[in-house]
Amino acid sequence: MRSDYCGTLTAKDIDREVTLCGWVDRRRDHGGVIFIDLRDREGIVQVVFDPDTGEHFNLADRVRGEYVLQVTGKVRARDAATVNPNMATGEVEIYGTALSILNEAETTPFPLDSHSSVGEDVRLKFRYLDLRRAEMQKSLRFRSKLTNVVRNYLDEQGFLDIETPILTRATPEGARDYLVPSRTHESKFFALPQSPQLFKQLLMVSGFDRYYQIAKCFRDEDLRADRQPEFTQIDIETSFMDEEGIMSVTEGMVRQLFTQLKDVDLGDFPRMTYAEAMQKYGSDKPDLRIPLELVDVKDLMGEVDFKVFSGPAKDPKGRVTALKVPGGNEKLTRKQIDDYTKFVSIYGAKGLAYIKVNDKNDLEEGLQSPIVKFLPTEARKGILERVEAENGDLIFFGADKATVVSEALGALRCKLGEDLDLYTREWAPLWVVDFPMFEEEDDGSLNSLHHPFTAPSCSPEELAKNPAEALSRAYDMVLNGTELGGGSIRIHNQNMQQAVFRALGIGEEEQREKFGFLLDALKYGAPPHGGLAFGLDRLVMLMVGASSIRDVIAFPKTQSAACVMTDAPGAVDEIQLKELNIRLRKKEKPAAEAKAD
Ligand code: ASP
Image 1 (cartoon, rainbow, N blue to C red):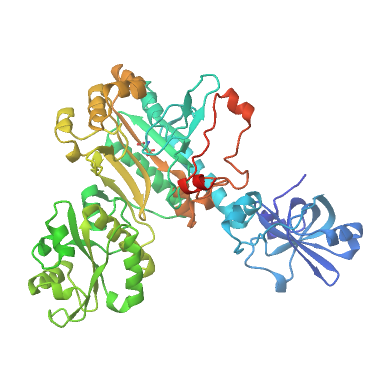
Image 2 (image 1 turned 45 degrees about the horizontal axis):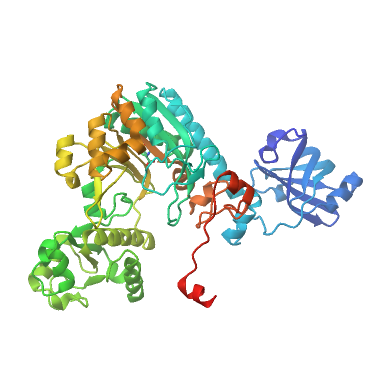
């Protein structure tokens, strides 16, 4: 039906006769001559029809935005005065000789020009139209190129692309499962995979040695901003490779993506331990583009006559830390400081103390702050020295349980970086290593920080003795404060796997019921193995500079995990439920409503 894409025509094509198919981006009537901007996935070209073309001109007069056309014409140079340097095809236009309308279009529910400010709900409801916008086309094309580079790279490195099941048993990654009822097995359910974790490990037991898959994963989480219940991973597993080997292959992959697709050399990625990341940045995914650091001052605060500081200073689980904003005195208004106080409260911080350093040599009059009167001179001096304060700096403080302080001031650090545009470079990748095996819940129980198949760096006996202190052989790749991927060396020995299950409070019976197949497999010559998975959506989002993960997924779910276009999830009819042996429970009404009935 066509000879060329609209968006690819250039001066080289002048005098060629072409046939194009595409959508009407714009139609203008310029005193008897009709201009149509015809658009396809490669871009836009201008088509001109003049009245000499008779019936074709009349048709051109009829077309409206988003009509689908087939146009034949000759490529010609534009007049010097009308050359459009902002358009890839701006040097040429098509002198149209024939036109047929392949389909008409009603007026679209929102204008498709890329600066359209229509709400996201409308864009998602008419996603097929939203995807016509150049920006969206560009992002999805980038995504396709990216997966292509990934496949080529991994293929060259000897990785095999192997699919794993979608209908399966629970694969714990710390979220709720999406369940699928089975019709053929009454009262039984499949779970959609939270990741292909166990299958890829079993592929290692089978000897495939290097596996990858661009895999869909499903996690029924309470949706935090910018998460998707269904997302894509570049999932990787290898045998007979240690941490160094795996990190080097996967770092190479990300470096190649950046050189090939963005012409950016990321260089070698630095390494940082989890402990250092939490201490300096309050986060296990530090954004190293921001030059601010948390500086602990707990030891200076034990004896001060100010409970807000001395309490956490004396608490072994407490943390008292300072965050210096160089020049913050001038840069931050009172209103901003109030806003930051509200901001840290989201993370559980009860307040945000600060000191403005007007004159660092005058510890009595030179410090301006609602709290400075509570701090003895020694403490003031200690703080200024510790953070290396200069006149004009502003120092924020966090004092609370360590988890609250790290989260709140870690987030504040990133917010300050963004608000004050403190970024020192465009890309800051790193590896975070030496994670704890477990995180402790308030009730003392343990949860895996990664997943229960991650190998500890200690023996099963040491693990049993002091699980809370055990470190894992896990590693996360972080870019600009976002976790791009994470993985670990796995447990390949049944005893060790059972020791970890025990530490997690998973008893013998539950182990067999849920993971019997894995424990069995580990008995039959499981090789040492490990791997990693990258969040593909997030990687694309960072690389194209999109502000939301939804902008790099063709058909994403909303924040409440629904598809407004297809209206999913939807109700099912009684017959289907019957086949599945499912009876829906009536949702219990809140007490007040029930009474009113
Ligand atoms: N399965 C892990 C995840 O989804 C990644 C890995 O350990 O390879 O986060």
